[in-house]
Image 1 (cartoon, rainbow, N blue to C red):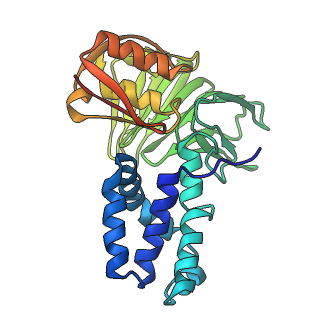
Image 2 (image 1 turned 180 degrees about the vertical axis):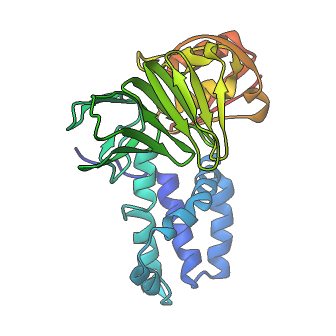
Amino acid sequence: MKARQLPPAVAQAVEWLALQRSGTMSDGHRQRFEHWLHASPEHSLAWQQLQQRIGQVFSGTPQSSREMLDRAGNSRRHLLRGALGLSGVGLAGWWLQGQGLLPGLGADLQTAIAQRQRFDLADGSRVLLNADSRVDLLFDGRQRTLLLSQGALNIEVARDPERPLVVRTAFGEARALGTRFSVALHEQSAQVWVQQSHVLVSVPGATPLQLRAGQGAQLDGRRVQALDPQLARAAAWEDGRLEVHDRPLSEVIEALRAYHPGWLRISAEAAALRVTGIFPLDDSTQALRILQEVLPVRVERPLSWWTQVSLR
């Protein structure tokens, strides 16, 4: 499949940043840059997004490339432009991933935006990955470990008394006791919900908690906190629906992000609104339309790749 080109505003922002970093920017260049920056909202947004991610771009640049980027003049500008626009860790990769055209790179199991997928593991276990998710596998003669680094999974565990199955996250882990359960990552925590049998959840330095079917827990890296069983349906993304009861709108938007191409943002005021309903994950546009009909919010797309939810 032929990759899409960067939108013009983003490509132009790359050129301007490369010129700034090259050390050859003249007063005339600065005046033209200011004119370009304020000529269109697309230019301003593209520049803001690029500035926010520039640290990520260069943190992934090899040491040898960073040394080359220190050279002065047009050759340095050329290299900067290439690093920003073409490398796998640069802006092009970032842009394609944000559009849902390119899944995360390097994971054993992964899905793209709006894609759920089942995987059969070598031990007979079955995994369903939520959209925009990444998992690495550590399977050998002593262990069965799944490293969830992004998104969410639901797993039906095959029995193996010699090798426990563990789902590990940055916030804690869930150890299967012959079961089916789900694990979902959030910005500052992970949630575990059990559908069958039992799961032992733990974080370093805290007392582990054993969960049975219908129970859930939140792990934040410091403690394990039991969750209200009524929240279980909100975590049940497997059938492509999101069901919430008197929850903040921010939680609905967070769930929709894995199914919505581009950037989906919500204002702090709108995020605090409470919402009850059932929303289709597989049609994020329809879900946003429903929210706009039942809540005092407006959904705007100032750019084709930018969706903003805010109070009316």
